[in-house]
Length: 133
Image (cartoon, rainbow, N blue to C red; front, side, top):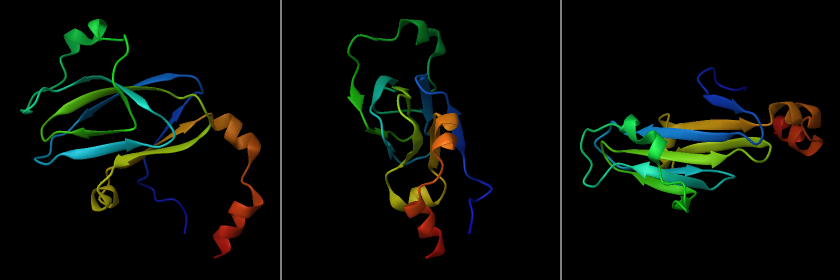
């Protein structure tokens, strides 16, 4: 078995700062987790959340002085959050809802940092041996 055609992988150059806006259009909350990084919570919808959207007119005035730093954040039902992280080391890093069956239902993507560096390293032999299992 290979990769599914419906995998979402976003390639990010190493060292790039990524802003990620999560808009939860669902009636349930979702605890989103980013592997391999901690992100800053730049802004999030007020609670209780309503069917609002991120106010883009506030983007240039975000609090960049010591914002909350996490690797998991629950996005409220019908809420949103603007997250920021630095892609500071190579790898494939999953970003997903931490409710297992939500992840299986499609609430999972990956950030590939430093794709050129990864290609030069290649796949280690012990990892390749797992493909024969």
